[in-house]
Length: 277
Image 1 (tube, rainbow, N blue to C red):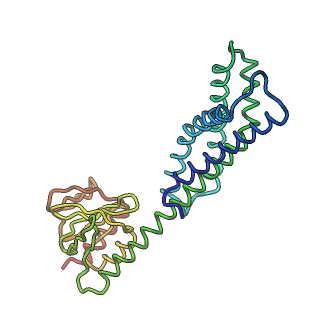
Image 2 (image 1 turned 135 degrees about the vertical axis):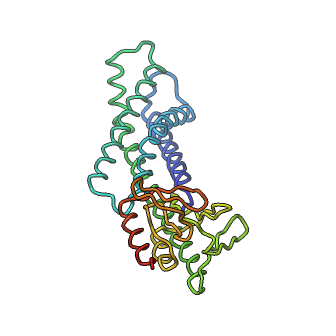
Image 3 (image 1 turned 180 degrees about the horizontal axis):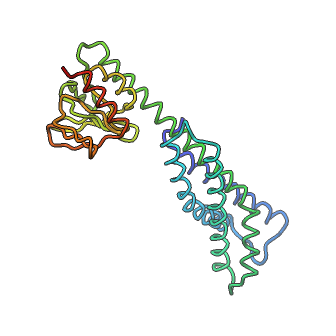
């Protein structure tokens, strides 16, 4: 599997550019379709490279939007979201074709005219429309698969880390920092913060990043005085100084303030009630 989708996308586009240039050169030579002087292969290659470069610039727009969608709700993307994403891709590709047509007219024509501009749009639409659509689908597919790979990698690391702590009386966090391994006692952890596909383990001295999911930590640490107060925060009750239920804020002993949700408030009340004498 390709480690990063950019490599596959670039290799695929370069292959398409070479094919387009070779195909056009073949037709021009075979049927003598040159308007004036013969055109070299490299001139054709650079012409196609310019068009694909413009498409590449515009593709970042929907590529970024798709990546955010895949990261946020990869497993729960609704059909309507796919339709909206597809429509957005088509609109961006159309804008790219219009931009390429405008550049063609400005570059090759002596004067700019609406008629010539319209003809160029139709020409580029028929010449590149399907290729751009296919390439856009490839970009979305690679981004979707890569987001899944990140999730699987996070889960594998999570399993390895949890195995290291599951058989101990008091769990520890084993965190890789470069070539070193940092072992943190659970009692040192004040709170845990969700961070992309990872979590940040906060101690009084430092925060450490670990590949793991909040959901699995919530389940495994529930018996060790930790409570999930927010989708992005897991608190060690031993480090709570006070709780303000009016402003939905928790103040830790280290003076760190953390907000909690309505669900988190219920969890807190329930946990505190079970611990109270």
